[in-house]
Every structure is written in C-alpha cells, then in structure tokens.
Length: 391
Ligand code: RFL
Ligand code: PHB
Image (cartoon, rainbow, N blue to C red; front, side, top):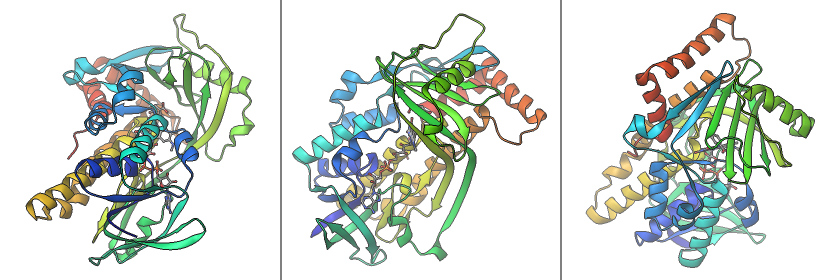
C-alpha cells in the first residue's frame, strides 16, 4: 500500500489530521490498532478550547458540536468552603470553551472519514516506522492477521503515549522532560444532571475534586486519589460521600447523587519529547507530550499539532518550500510548553501534594486568594484555560 501521509492512530489527532488533509486534497491512510467501538467509547476529555471548536467547524465536523455542545463562559474555583467564579469572556475579550466529549468528537470524525475520506483501518496495528530519515518512510503493520507495509511520503505518529512512533527517533537525538505525580484521578460517569451549570474545580484538605459533565443529564466527576488506587476499591457510596465533603460550601449548595455507570483511575504525568520531528516522521498529540488533565489541555494540544502539520504540508505543496515543515517541532513546542506550564500550575494549585509542608499549603491558599482578588491573576488563568493561539 502507498499513500502521501501515513497516519498512525485514530484518536482525535489522527482523525482530525486525516480530515484536514482530505479537505486540502492530500491523501492519507489511517492505521488504528483498536476496533471502532473501543475508540468511540473511550472516556477522556470534555473541554474544547474555542480555537479547537473553530477548527472542527472549519473542517466540516461542527454540525453536532454546534447542536449538542454546551458553551461555558466560566468555571468555579472552590476552596475553604468558598466559591469564586472566573468569568472567561469578561477577562479575555469574549473567549469561552465548549463542553463536548472527546468520544463525540471521535464519533463525528470517524463517520466523516468513512463516508468521504481515505482508508481508515481499524484493528491495524503499526509495528514500526522505518526509514524516517530517508525520502521513503514506511510503516510496518499487522491487519487481518497478516503483516503489510505502508509506503509513505510522510508519517505522522498520532498513536498516543503508548504508541510505537516515538521509538523511531534515535535516543541520541532525543530529550525527554518528565514529571510523574504521586496521585491520580478516580473518574466516574453518573446518570444525574450536573449539580452546577459550570465546571467546579475544588481544592480541599482531603484532596482535589472536579465536577464536570457530558450532557444536561450526565455528570462527570473526579476525585484525587493516591497513585496506584484500584477504582473498584471505592464503593459508589464512598465516592459520593467523598465528593460531598470536598465540594462542601458555606451556602446551601448540594451535590445531587445518581447511579454511577462507569469508573476508572487515570495516572497523572507531565511529559515532553523533543524534538517532535525526525526526517519525515512527525509526532502529534499524546505521542509527543502529556499534560495532567487539570488544565483540560491534552486534546486541544493534539489539535494544535495536526493543524500545524497540515498547514506546513499545504505550504510545501503550494510554494515548494519546506520551511514550515522544518519548523514543525519548534512551532508546536512553543505552545506545548505553555500548556505544560499552565497544566502544572493548575495541578499544583488545586491538589493535595503529598509531603507538602504547612507553609506550602498556606501558599496554595494564598495563590487561590490572589486569583480571587486580582484581575491580573484571574486573567492569567482565564487566558490559559480558554487557550493559547495556534502557532
Ligand atoms: P489518543 O487519543 O491516545 O489516540 C491514540 C490512538 O492511537 C492508537 N494506537 C495505535 N494505532 C496503531 N498502531 C499502534 N501501534 C498504536 N498505538 C496506539 C490508540 O489505540 C489510539 O486510538 O491520542 P491523541 O489523538 O493524541 O489525543 C490525545 C487526547 O486523547 C488526550 O490528550 C486527552 O484525552 C487528554 N485529556 C483531556 N484533554 C483535553 O483537552 N481536555 C480535557 O478535558 C481532558 N480531560 C484527558 C482528560 C485525558 C484523560 N485521561 C483518561 C488520560 C481527562 C482524562 C481522565
Ligand atoms: C472532563 O470533563 O472529563 C474534564 C473536564 C475538565 C478537566 C478535565 C476533564 O480539566
């Protein structure tokens, strides 16, 4: 098999890239190791930056997003039993975010790709990227029980943190920056209308909690738990009781309970792989970088990367100049590091950090008070949350 752009992975990065290339008249093949149902059901991100929603619309994938997505103009910070709302449009000159689950983004893009796009092969596992630094990179993969080769003009590794693409960049050319946090998030889906109409980020002495949503009828809730926690070790009753404690306020706000339909634990890490390009192999999304979910940035970064790649390739086609392709890694990494910084700040602002001294805990509260009392500090948060510009 032969194609211009071989795309490994049908998460948001790979699927959107295939769509952007198709719209630009460039052919691609997407290889995805899992089956369609798995990719469409995997519970992950919930928040789209305005720039991300705009890209999806421009790509022709905005119809259901506009119908079912929920525009959010702010978030609530909760600490010391107090509530503070951050008003995004007022602080950022009109920017907002959209609650629209990653599962739905993937469903929309898969349907479009199967209808209008090039080949999207499920249960096709990439085994290795070969010849990345030559003019003829290849992807070796297994599909329908046999091995095959995809000959490409370019390979884009959109295969997530556990994928194989990254390993094709020689270790001696690579630098990795990483921080693993000694806690994770226990996430649940519950069939109950969200108890607040915006997301609530709560800092509590017992640990962080987040109230989010998937629709007006379905809540998505998270609890900070120690690293290595087994989700099944928490009964539904224990989860609700702990959420109630961490969301406690001095007013009459209450948390509505409902049946929990899913629970899982996510570990937390920050990770950046430099460079994001080697020859004709480009890394995009979680394949190149991970952020802790507190800043809601992972999916949005993945979108930024593939927009940057698609623009660079179109530029090369139109002008014959590879300057934007050559600048890919640098262009992406500028935005990546801003998201890394923001996600780290949000994580250390809101989580109970094991081993933190009483002094450090007081500083955490002082940082929250600063956001609640200074428009400059609050603006910094609002700008970060609603998103950094695409390069
Ligand atoms: P994905 O989504 O991991 O997709 C990679 C795909 O590659 C496939 N694959 C392979 N295919 C072929 N051959 C191989 N050898 C392969 N190896 C892997 C995989 O099966 C998969 O389908 O990466 P992508 O596209 O880069 O997208 C990144 C996002 O998924 C991720 O950053 C976000 O989910 C992170 N994230 C959030 N991001 C946000 O922007 N806003 C949020 O609110 C947000 N919340 C979250 C999150 C992630 C979470 N978890 C579970 C890590 C909340 C959570 C709890
Ligand atoms: C989610 O709805 O899954 C979600 C929202 C905000 C975050 C992380 C996850 O910061």
